[in-house]
Amino acid sequence: MYRNLEAELSRKGLTRSELAKLMNIRATTLSNKLNGKSDIKFSEAMQIKKILNVDIPLEILFNA
Image (spheres, rainbow, N blue to C red):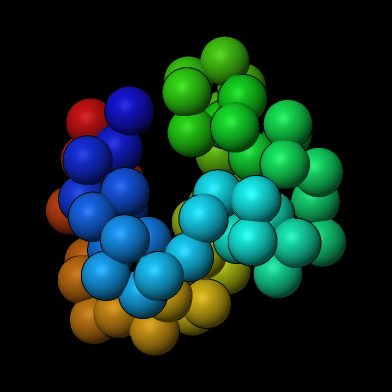
C-alpha cells in the first residue's frame, strides 16, 4: 500500500517480517497496518522511519 515505504525496505534489504521483529510486533499486525486494515499510529510511523534511518518526511514515506 505504501510504495515509498516498500521501496525503502527493499533498499535496506529488510522484509516486513524483519521490520515487525525490530518493532516488537507480530508480522500479521504490521501487515494489517501496511495493507490499510488497521491504522498506523504516529509513534509507529516514527519508529519505522528511525529503523530505516531515512530523512524522508513521513508524509512522503507513507504516501499511498
